[in-house]
Image (cartoon, rainbow, N blue to C red; front, side, top):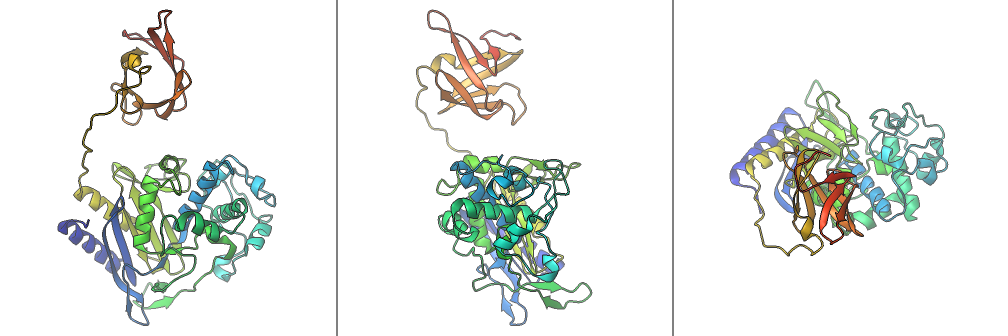
Amino acid sequence: MSAPEALREELVRRLRTAQAEQRAPSVSASVFRGDELLWRDAVGLADVDAGTAASPETQYRIGSITKTFTAVCILQLRDAGALSLDDPLDLHIPESRHAPTLGRMLSHASGLQREPPGEIWETLQVPSREELVALTAEAEQPLAPGSWWHYSNLAFALLGEVVARRTGSSWEDALRERVLEPLELVRTTAVAEEPSARGYFVLPYSDAVQLEPDLDLGGSGAMGKLWSTTSDLARWGSFLAAGDDRVLAAATLEEMSHVRVMVDHERWALAWGTGLELYRRGEHVFVGHGGGMPGHLAGLVVHRGSGIGASVLMNTSAGGQPEALALDLAGAAIEALPGTSELWRPGEPPPSEVEPILGRWWTEGHELVLAWRGRLEARLVGGAPGRDLSVFAPEGDAYRCVEGRERGELLRVVRAENGEVEKLYFATYPLRREPSTF
């Protein structure tokens, strides 16, 4: 399915305007909804000297969008029981003299210094895996873990080493076998594959460009090494919204999308989840990430509720705003493509043990309605959106809240001597059929 003509015209206008006003040699972009690639286009030159036009098939460096791939590998290992997000770093890399938890590293709350030791961006000398691990002894931890958001490329370079050690391979091999191949991301690679864009610095006081060096991140690849296309990133964005059991369950992607650290404390417009960047635009929250490498800038965002997202790639070092453009493109698509409600279908009756507890209950002076919608749900009447629904799973003779309000708490059924339901306890609060407080 393609985007409606009016939307396509608007997307093309925004793409061309961004390329002209931000003076990028080329810009490639895509808009998607779930598995549908609604639109893609590219304008400008992928190779200025050769005069080669960019196309939607052109690869660009995606920089720190790579971190979302590394995060997925870590969560895969967590779900498989190979590690915990509460593990200190030195449990997996004993050579480290710092021990923030893996979870804090994923959320940029580890306190570790921003870059691997050494002036890699000036010298272009990036440590190998062995050198990176040895250099951890020199790394600083300028902030206490958990005290503040502090972006750290070093943290993700070390997370890549954790992936390598726990899988018994390299970060690149683990990523390819566990993520890229199952999702058929054939144009997402550790090194450039033609057609690919050359990276440029656009001079600020003229329209001339300078070719940027092609930096190999060596043993720090997990922080930003990958190349990709906007079509592959659309598929990746769809995965971040919906999950894929071959790689990572939808419930884990939802967990990764929850706010862990607020970056913008005044406007609450930018935050971090578990390896994912969170952007607020009006009433919508998008997940994704931005990226930058010498000569390349990138942005990927997706609104999990609608599955609508956008990716943008540019071959310029400065002046480009790919994340803002991706948010603009995705926002335009959300506005132009109203959501459709799923048709209601008759369902199976509730289990016999559940049927007696359905209906109205009261606690703390509030009404709670239990219903069966293929699963046991409780909705707080008049509750704030996002805090009104609880979803339960059976646990012995009780029910455990597995989603929503009071997640993790127990719902117990109290029966009279004749077996009839007398009352309920939810998170130890009594629930009765008649209006009541405690």
